Image 1 (tube, one colour):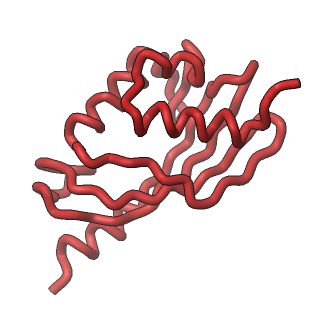
Image 2 (tube, helix red, strand yellow; image 1 turned 90 degrees about the vertical axis):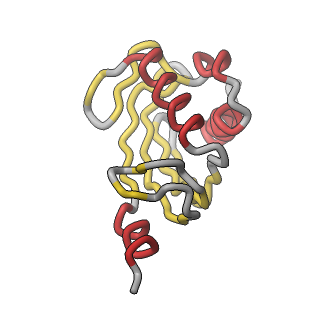
Length: 130
């Protein structure tokens, strides 16, 4: 019997939080797609590594999690201090809090598709409040 998707997903989140890039292939398919574009595991890994480099305090916290046999939806909470620009916004080390709504499709126990929507408006409110 295989572990429920929610358990595998939490292991994936732990992998990201621990910066265990060598284990990412245990959770993500070689031909993974991100927001409709096949990017592949190597590019997906490089993107996560780049995020961790540009956001030293990056920590993924799964707030809401819903899954069935091959799909999983998660609301991730972030409270971070990106260096430089983030999502085209001049964050420059300021702490911002926001959520990401992300959906995953799994095949053979690995993530094959990711659809992600970040709450950029929440960040803008924090940066540009009067």
